[in-house]
Image: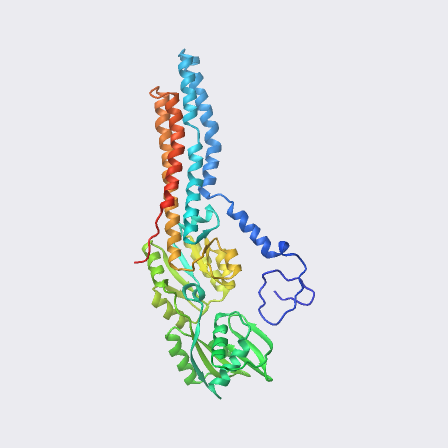
Length: 448
């Protein structure tokens, strides 16, 4: 959204172009980021869907159980002249057996254990609701840079189309100086390593998803994607050949242009994380489809995707990622894994958003879960933990309802009395708690 002098600026806003001077008008406790944090804390206190269902069920079940126990106590003596002591005794025993304590405890106990196990592994999940949904996902969408790759790209190739490589690299570094983008930092680092001094830049601005440009020594220097450069001026066959060859090697190529005339090419490569391929295989073993959503060019995206063994959709702007997530979500629950500000809309739109621990604050605040160790394998570990937690919940519900069903029948039939009913109620609660604690011994499967 365009801003002019005097307009308010939200904390956490991203400056797409130009340089701004802003004045702080509110304390940190009352800014947008603080409000987001409070919302996250409230979400952490939210109950899991199963827990909410059981509470609603208990609200109906408890009055019915009390009414049935009262009916058992008074109906036989009143209608059939049965012994009052016997049937009041059975009614009290039935009331004890029907107590929903174990049922209500079955889900939160398992969720608490699951969250504790995840925390030990460095898997932070914002509440039981998120932990439940993770186990039901059928597709995982990954960002590329900083998620599937290390996020520390380096310059691999430099080619000048006019003038010297040193001059061309110096111009590119001057434009990118101060940029937070990984590719920009790689260019600046290479210039520093080569001992190239940076010239002062004026009127720097970014063209989101396309280029960065600035005025240097009176000339407009642009560092952008090959497609954007081709829109400004034709590329030579030599340049196009080099771009194609480098992109087929999984490298990202930027074109440096001076007054729209291409002056050189710089290739940058960001290596995949060491565990990325193993992480994708682990998800496939769980029956989960993986797809990479990247703003990089199709050839580079395809080269990285083939190495890791997953589908790729490349050349995407943030709004394109959002649209892809919406299409996937319409088919089945989907998780989005990312680390940058540009990933935040997709993280929020997905069934579950998962942020890499080394990512931006915005991504971490938006996501439902965070991988503190920034390992791709931990996505599969998170799914496995969620499924184990769901299985534990189902076991707890079966224990609670199974014991009650058996003792309801035996109590009404007069086979068991008050004390067995007390033991059944207390025993079910103890068994549910012990089964939930058993989840604390869950062992994560490592990559083969």
